[in-house]
Every structure is written in structure tokens, then in C-alpha cells.
Length: 228
Image (cartoon, rainbow, N blue to C red; front, side, top):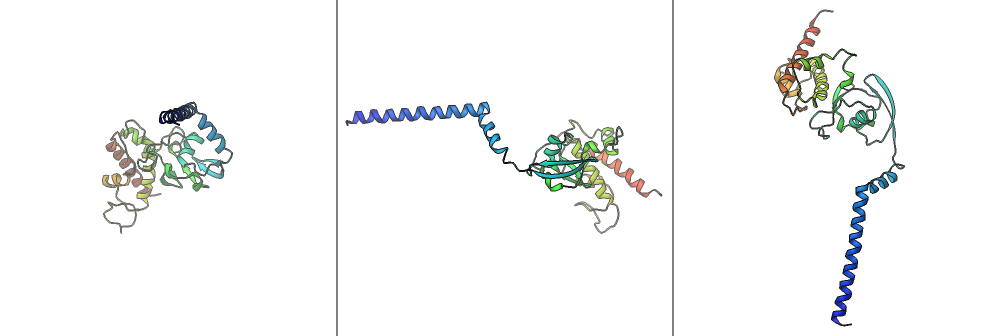
């Protein structure tokens, strides 16, 4: 075969390969755009998904659920139990918008697997009020305008509820002057800011947040000192 004939065959094979590759790329892009690949993947994965039985008590109501063990507590609350008050912010445990109370302690629900808290008592911002009566911290946040857009507010309030409990129990923080002192800790603005540092307000409503927590904290301290 001559050199020209060889070049012609090689060119023909190259064009054929290019056309086949282009067709494959076009078909794949159409499948991705139309959802074909996603539907196939979902169909093949769905039957193999294992679920785990979980019992939770959320805002005073009992739930018996079967969950994918990878489900976060945040996604369970928002997507399964229709409690959207708990917000998904960074979804990395850095902003505090997803803070809820588990057995009275504050956690970032975006980092918590729901199955771990089987049998736990969970409180979200929806469970703080008593009917139409706001929780004292909710009312104080309104009074002191401790919010602007309000996205971080549910997490701020849940965190503040637990924080005041920690102060009342005498749990020290990084800025507590005397960690040896027994009993409740003086609720200074510095203590509040340090203890709430895990909750970020992108609108910068920190003065109102601190004022609201300080007011309720002082009210609770006065009640604790009152004779029964």
C-alpha cells in the first residue's frame, strides 16, 4: 500500500473514532440533562438502601421512624417531620443556625446522625413556646430586636436556652474569672459573647442578642434567689 493510501485509511479511522466519541458525549449530556442517569441511579440504589428503626421524642411528641442511617438530625427535622424552624446554614457545624436541644444540651444538628439519638428528647425552636405564649428568650429577642433577617435566630435562641442553663449550673467558660467558685456564674456581657460565639449572625445583630440574653438571665437569677 502506498503512503498516500495509508494516510487515507488512517484519516478515515480517525474521523470514524471522532464521530463515535462525539455521539457518546452528546448522548451522555442528554441523559444528564434529562435526568435519565439520575433516575437509573436512584432505581438501582433504592432497593438496596437499608433503614434503621429509631424512636425520638420531638417537642413533646413521640415518633417511631425507619431511617437511612446516614440521615442527619437536621434533615430529619426539616424534611421528614416538617419542622423547618431549624435552619440549614453552612451544613458544616460552623454557623450554629441548626442548633437544637438534645436532652437539654445544645448541638449542631447538621453534624448529628439521627440514629445516634434514638430515645432522646429533642427540642427545636417550635417547641419552646407554650401555645401562644412565647418563651422568655423569644419575647426578649423581639423586644431587643436581636435579629434582622432572622435566619440565624432559631439557632441563637436554642443555644441561649442551653447557655443559661449551663451558667445556672456553674459550668465555666474560657472567660470565667474564678473557675473554683461554686454556684451560678456572673452573667457578664463577656460571658454571653464567649458562650454564644458558636452562633454567627451575618446581619450583625449582636448587641440586641446580648441584651436579650442578659435580661432573661438576670430574671432567672432573681427567681432562683426568691424564697419558695
